[in-house]
Image (cartoon, rainbow, N blue to C red; front, side, top):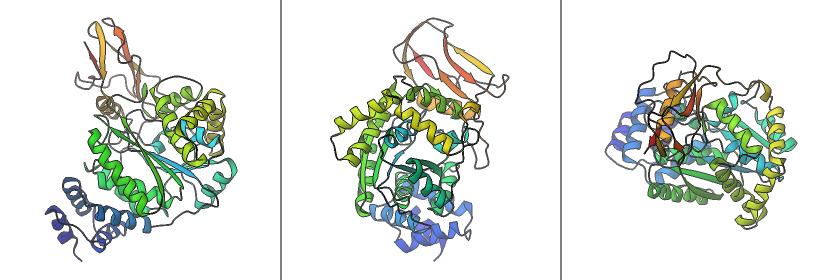
Length: 406
């Protein structure tokens, strides 16, 4: 087969066969085709899409590129398609695990403006994100919760494609996202899979209709591979939490685990309840009560600390930058909107995200929002705190367009 012919075929909106997809993607994994040719194919896929048959084929190619985990018990997993300030995993996993429903999850690094769970975990000094297969199994059996980065042996194809998509403008392709998500969940051995599909200006998926279409895609893949999958569709026009940035988001999640009431808590309970309902075979409304209790009685917080310590993390050493710029209101009025995408762009400019494959993340920088939608503000009142590496950083008016005040 010829990679150029495959690229041209997809460029011309033709359907690729299983063998063509396998050849192209496995050749990239084996380093027999370069970044620029795979980038061209990814762009053609992003522009022209894939049929369901192609998406199922690509998911299978991804799964078969490496190892497949099998547990001696039923385990749960969750995924979010990505959003600004989305640290729900840090709340959901301990809630679920505190009810003796094991959570075994492999997460990724940031894509585009959205922070990755692994980047956030790496902001915790000592936390070990890379675990062997044996270590992964042992921790699930020991405490019922483990979150690590992908091992080299599990869906290695997704790992290299994920990294390339991040820097080639191909992050928003729904078939590629679907194959990436589902191949990892299936290979990771989960019995209960819940996927939070974000839509809005701060997400890869912009409209609720596209989110519904994506949901059908994920459910079809789950059915094809005989997995129980549930999806939730949630908005992402405003940041999910008041903190954007790696260490800042971990601190925010801890506040929620300690009892803070906010949208991040609400979404986390909804997702956790879906997992609990599947695992315990009870109605979601009853599962929500159990999840709220796990937060209120501090069981989830205790499980969180146990998990982080077991995996080597030292929360006492978690740090944010000591250089802070206060963003103040230029007028009096009411906050009408907080732009998730603009928060994401600003966080990236501050150093909290990656612009290239080789970019290094500054875990201590980010944004802390001090106001919510509907709040009344006076001129010169503090709206947000920007945690920066350098106080002399040059920020334009465009960079600071986070709040809409009327």
